[in-house]
Length: 410
Image (cartoon, rainbow, N blue to C red; front, side, top):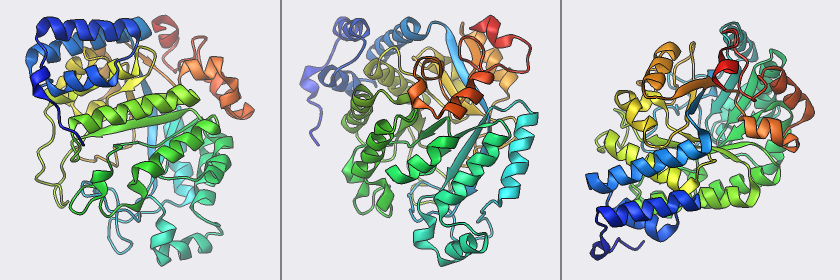
């Protein structure tokens, strides 16, 4: 991968001109993106990028920032991959290994519904039946053909409780996504990085057959062909270069240009965790994360929904709001973030207060965004869209139990 040529550094006027051109064009192209990214450590350039991103967000989204009230259900934390930064995946003999029964899924979903949650986020490890005989035996004992059958039944339980499923289950085939589509409002897979280097020995994805960038891109393409509202994202700080980050964001944009199905892009910082090979890796600073949020907004344009998880940078929510985000993602009043259990969700009332103090308005959404729900009926099974519309206000945001709150905000 070619390095930046720092002979072509930008002064303030050049940085501002570069950013202004991107804002007016609705997208930042590769060459200027790489030049700006090379100098994000310069406060002058970083400020120009952030101001431009905030203006781009304002043009596309106004002052609205969204959040989804959800329950997080990690169906199984067995996984055949061993990411060097992950504490979610467990071995079958671990006392922390957990596979939910369908009755447990129903209990969590009903508790979520009682708390006003409209999204059931299903997350699980990649291909556990390929790696573990004990898990295959568990499936057979419970009259389940495979993990997709198990996941489909869990999604149906949530749907029948009127909580809309969003599935993030690692790599799924076109056939598997087709089976899940009738019960899901949306699905997702973090692209993370397009860098094949991360699969090299000693790198973050060396022991991860499902983290091959070509495999991730192919699933994005198949989801587009199936017309599934899809979540993607970039993971910052796992060994990738700034050039590779730009490449990842451009790859996501290219996929959306082709299929029109990328409904949101998560900009997620790596959090080092003890007892992992990457425990001592220094993560990006909050200021760097905000800079990359801004670069993402400029590359992806004013209409994209750009998300930053509030529990992963809790001290700089205002900085993120002024760097171009328009979504906080799923925040649960009931369940923890099982991927980052050390990072507690903010209380929704506190998140609303901080969002409003930064001059923005917090609006609850469903696991599918209004522009898909209202304008793209072909992206849904009819019964899924019917349930989503029943839970939406006229603007397509969530109709919450706080009487009329979203109608006033939208």
